[in-house]
Length: 64
Image 1: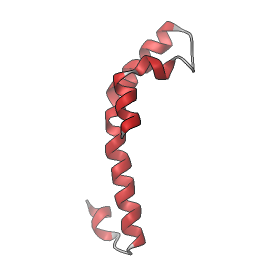
Image 2: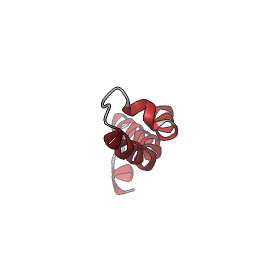
Image 3: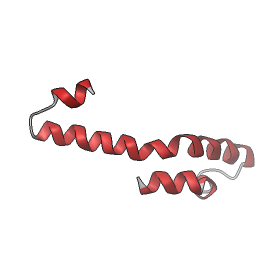
Image 4: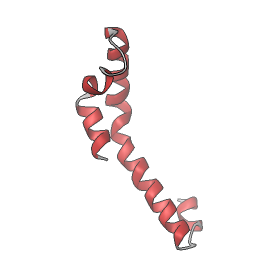
């Protein structure tokens, strides 16, 4: 969750190690600002799903 928020707030910092092309950095930054906030929700969903697998109660999370 924290990494997703940092990527959304400071996308250029995350893009610099991968490319020096300003056009690619701008497109990557746009992508991170758009998608990165959802990373926390995806991570929470995965944690809850695999936790429910450990308790052998998978039906409800799968249907949700």
